Amino acid sequence: MPSDKPAAARKDAHLDLALDPGTRSQGENGFDRISFTHCALPEMRLEAVDLTTEFLGYRLSAPLMIGAMTGGTARAEQINQALALAAQQQSIAFAVGSQRAGLEAGQTARQLRSLAPHIPIIGNLGGVQLAQSGGLDLAKAAIDDLQADAIAIHLNPLQEAVQPEGETDWTGVKQAIAGLVKSAAVPVLVKEVGAGINATLAVELFEMGVTAVDVAGFGGTNWARIEAARRSHDSAMFAPFLDWGMPTIEVLQQVCEACPGQVVIASGGVRHGLDAAKAIWLGASMVSAAGPMLANLGATDAITKIYQPLETTDGAGVIFDRCAGSGGIPPGTGAAGRYADHALITPPLHDLITQLELLTAIAAPARQQRHSARFWQCRQSAKSAAAVRA
Image 1 (cartoon, rainbow, N blue to C red):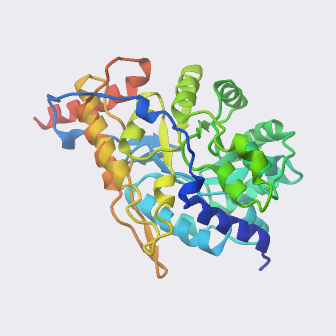
Image 2: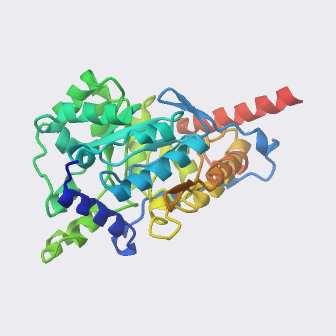
């Protein structure tokens, strides 16, 4: 089997550096600027909260996704297998990292589909690679190999610029995305990797026929810092760009307002269920998180307690919103997957869902906006269920 040792070494270095606190974004993503008003009298049963949602033709336990992290190496394969199984057991969506290196090395990721047959699995390829000769064929190979339900094209010009071996010819990417939308057998998603997608670009992408946009704002995993840490002697010239990007909350709100009715995915520093609840309240259709899992990858247990912080907080927000009549937040399964000794063990991801459910019940937003419609929907769903039982 062919191998690409430099690419594999780079991918593994990315994982190690992503675990280093020094490569985290030093600015804030905006989630802490938003607060919910507590509702002391929710008038509902917590277990009646229904946070299920539809995404890519699947019914999920919550509007949550394990975000793209890695791919293309033996280590990445083990991590992705653990994550796929965890997502399957908790009925949430799962996105893989870039498939380019693996495909070019003759590797396959098709085993992930057998581990997760009943959830959406999203493939991944870089926009720069898509625009190169043979890019459309590579994207279709990524879809076919993974039996993916959709493919995400990631945009990462800053990362490529800072990366020692980065590819910095960004011409033709927009045209390539439009071509993929027309020719691909599955929906096409577009995402950034941590600097954000602004509202103007999001409108353009939806006009091309893209199914969903992941705003991937600033405040989470910082790829500029990760790539700068890989440079031996000239990283200082990139210092002004180490915390470059649009805060997640700001770009999410702008994109949701500019693209009503479209599928907008929130990611970029989501720490727990309360952050997820805030993103959904602002208009996100789905919330994607990777950092909380990455933080546990260096431990012996590999991927442990990944979503516990997310799950607890989300429930709280669900309750808050119910009191104001804003409806419930579709909860996501928070969850920890664990991969050790080639055995997949999935600790409960239910904490994240619990946090979202609780939030739906006890959070009363101080002001009502059209973006709170999803809270209203969940709240009414829970009340209807309670009425039927009565």
